[in-house]
Length: 320
Length: 320
View 1 (cartoon, helix red, strand yellow):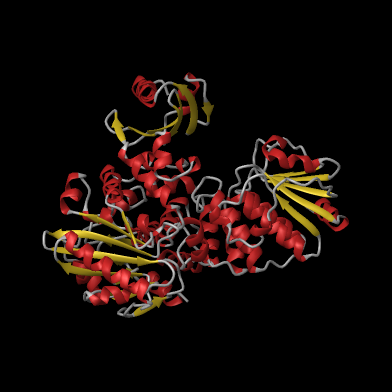
View 2 (cartoon, rainbow over the protein chains, first blue to last red; view 1 turned 90 degrees about the vertical axis):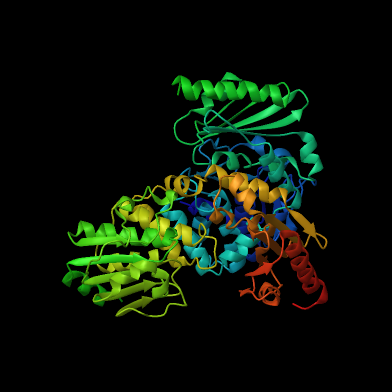
């Protein structure tokens, strides 16, 4: 599967690894694993990212070497990992020019914009594919590279709980543990290291929790002032909606985030039967049947009324 | 490893499966897996438990057949799963008499009180051992039994995040997925089905969150009134302390639960360096270096002062 890629690595001297803006665990973990391996092979290699490495991933080997796309530089070979299209590379896309581009990804929406494209939507994480590449290279993983790949996989599978988790995912996790990964150590660093502001934001979100329609709908809302006052950042609101969704009686959870005084972003999650994409579409948004979102022009209170009404209608009206 | 056990199963006609009081996912999952298999083999088999099966595990096949230890009955063979000593069996211990007792467990503290004892503290869950037994029996797992074993393992490893998770754990999880387990389905049932009261209790706990000693110590406290008013139960306070512990700056988290107006239970967790067992011991309690507890006679406020002082002393005094 990777024989072309392996020959390209052998032929190349200057290699860059790029990935998408707003990096996540899979992006960082799979890129750093490849970076560490190429570096150990004596290659001149750079891992270039538009954004900073999030604090919780800074324990991974090589994270201190990540560079910003500031300097013009030519590479023979550019890896683009975990990134479906050029636009998501941000400024780093400038390094594609003149290079052989190898895209390795697991997003079904990937646009195959490389010279070589290894895209496998059945892989739970790009980290799985880099693991396979290293196996095919006969590369013996050390603990540091294994930690990178384990972090890629554990984060992109939501601790092996999302539907993308397969028997292959588990087999690879087992092999990474055999290579030295200490599970509780990674878990401590990735999952037990919330910034204080995020926990204060969870508190604010729960204080706003409301139940509707016989507890089948929940709604939480946060203003920009609350995000600022708790000392948290916009991305700390991610996944807060799960507190509202993960209640036994709930079918639809709504989360409303104020963007400005007259504009909000609404997120919708459903559990078993309601197609929230249909609801989001009513407001010009979209997504998937279990997870969608939309932008509403109005105050938090106005948006809440509109959305809750629409959800209630769909739950009670049989309009599934 | 299980050849003795397998012969006993073949010889026996009346089989009981017992486990500890206050059942958890491993206890229920491993017992139901064995129950379903023995039942499918045409054995007369009963799974007897002192307590009710928790609601989140009622989707597992056979959970509706679990019986209370009400009727006197004799069994040839009694399995005791996931239970370190007879006392933890509660009233169900009455069925041990006159039977061949097979103990299968992964607790290091197991007292080997059976006629046959298969105790492996390296197994992440008793579910792993039952999986091995079924493999040795050449039993082809169906999805229903696989769901029971997967639930046993995912709960006892904290979603594959606790230090008991090994490469073998992951390999078994992979095999169970191959037998038909739909990961997201189990996750939805086990982890996305909180009672409403529990989420309201998280809110109350976070409202009580205080920071001390440059944010290295957190404290949360709940009264009996709050537990009642939120419609939650005492066991819903379990793990709430993690919200205080899982903050990057925090070394010690304290959780205080009022028992009566003049008596509280205090829980302590540390992350990297403080031995909280020493702190608990000052108040007549105990536990492990990273997780301990004690009972204090006094109001919530009085207990909070005492404990926070003791933690502060240990953090700052170098008395680790």
